[in-house]
Image (cartoon, rainbow, N blue to C red; front, side):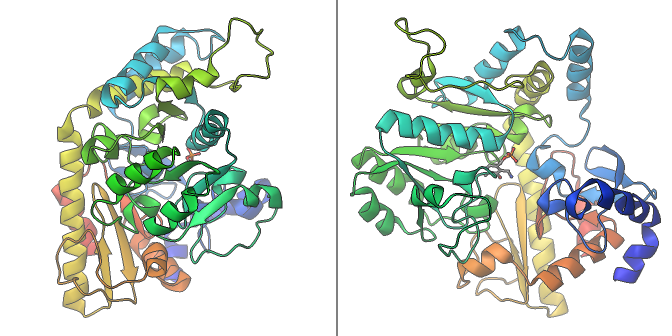
Length: 436
Ligand code: PMP
């Protein structure tokens, strides 16, 4: 497999040799690391991208989930092109930032006020700070295996199995303010919140890593009740799910209202950007008070050069307008279901231990493991499988071989799975199943 991979990608290999002098390990994001070298892409459109050697790939990275509308969607291209000619940064308010916030508030009524950030990482950092300021409590509770970006408070408990081990560069004091709950353990949460020192519970409301470890039925409702009872805030990290699970995210789908919501990716239409939205009385901590000048230390501060950047606002507005039509999510969901079912059928037919699962428009692949309800169908919750298996999916050796082999066959997976878009067609899915 690796030999074919090397032979098909001489130009990518040449660029990687150059990249090794530019970047540690030659990559600009941890998940883009691939042995013997990653693919270099020249252009992308719809659900396809083309590498420097002219190979066509059906894309399931989809901008790490940012491109629900596919690559280079004409309306987004047009909106960004029109804005870039009018300037890229005003250092002032502009009408598009208002429209952008209003579209978010309309899709997510829990977001009574909004603040824009430059990324999802910044949004979860600000959500945690606000929760601490609002409650006067220092601790944040998060769930083992859930991902919330790369700032210091997001790192503890990110990997499974969870250990209290430290992470290079992160002060021990930070670890002491983050409580990590075992996978899906609400009894632990209830007991821990009773101590009265937890400002907020944050989670991916899809379950860890975009539904790779699904939540049991009624989990979000029960978590809402527990957090309310202990006067602890509830933060939904909807960076992935915010506009993908439904136009109003998981919160509208499940009918559970968080106190704060973090967003990124689709919210900025494929450009850099993020947002935090939430209850007006909590967001009010960001307000300037009449009795204090701008330098006051009594409010929660929030600068950020690229907050509500006009280019991201233009792409975000165009995108949110389009994805407000639930037909977008329905199409992507249907394509993902077709893919999950097809992959499971392949595994059954070939007699390979493994299963494919997911919800909404995402999928995850496990190889070398079995689940009780595989049966060549589309499944959301694999039965009888340990959370560590669901999080990892397969051994690093198999994961590498699968990724290389799928690239050889014209398919770019993401993290042992993938995210779909409105641009994927039944033919693309069937080609992908053949490749698999
Ligand atoms: N939260 C979740 C649930 C995410 O999936 C991600 C990114 N994959 C982040 C936060 C961080 O967002 P960003 O990469 O924009 O900083």
